[in-house]
Image (cartoon, rainbow, N blue to C red; front, side, top):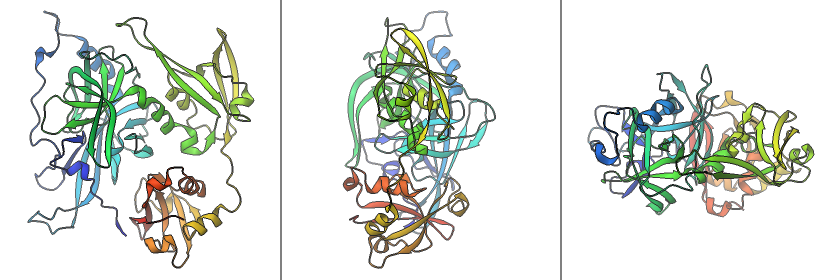
Length: 474
């Protein structure tokens, strides 16, 4: 087992064709570790878009002015082992490395969407707003498979929220705009065209993307997690990767595939174990090519005996409003449930048969764990655990919210073989935090558990964060 100083090979690979568009640089001296360029690429040629003679304030200027405050700059720090070819630092000696990315404000209370690879394995996160305000951020939830993450800051006033459009009707050749923390140059704007749709890109044997938007808008290191926008100011993609050594070949995740994942990340069921019982479907229409997209969210399934069923929701209902939030996407519906505990009554308006119907939904905690879950964890992993609060683990990492203290380890068990010790605080399994036994049970009973093996774990020990792997889970 070792301290969590894992270097993400994706960030430091110098010979890969495609890399995530996150910037990482050593904080000591003048050396920089850029996976793509030693110098920034030339700016896009002004002739790439049509500009009306005598009109300086074009669509790019307008979009940037309207949306710049809903895009944030992300700065991170992690500890990595020094490369063996550094003559001034012994191989393996830890060094601080700075990383940079971009984020999109999803909710004015400080919830921000970015890429998973921007926040993976970081020790600290800072978010800078367009007005210069700087805030410590914490990771709320992650989706490694989709390369998405939700982070949170605590601003003194509500942040502007960026509108989500659709990637379904993007046209090859259509003008697009990117805003991001390119090479650490905060709130940089570039523009270009949609070069291709549905591009599959492989980073290495373990990571790749399918169905990306390819664009000629310069996407540079540091742009990861930022918005790709159409000229109407709608988010059509989340910038994610660039082609190493090439100019004006960048890639973005289509927003239509991002929205349901983002709704899951911000949703109360994933974060708090609170159940509402609705399965939703995002829909989008556009009356004309130049008109704004119109989104709607309809009820696709109502779980039996759920809060939604008890409130009177029906399949086909179109969500109109939850509390004081207008529902445009499934993300908005989940936003309306933020900070609502189990037992809270939430007013919801739906459109049914052309008329608005008002419903009251009382949230419920998720199903209780069956008796004997701790015994099942003991049997499968060989550990007994008890929940502890954030004060037990913040010395190891201030972003941690708590964990499970190991009170016993069975001799010869999977946990013992993996190096887990009595007194450790288990804070994570695979990509999920472990605040309670429900979290552990979720991982151990996951339908894809076999693909997680060897199962990575994280523990707080003696004020430090450690990690290791459990080779086999019975």
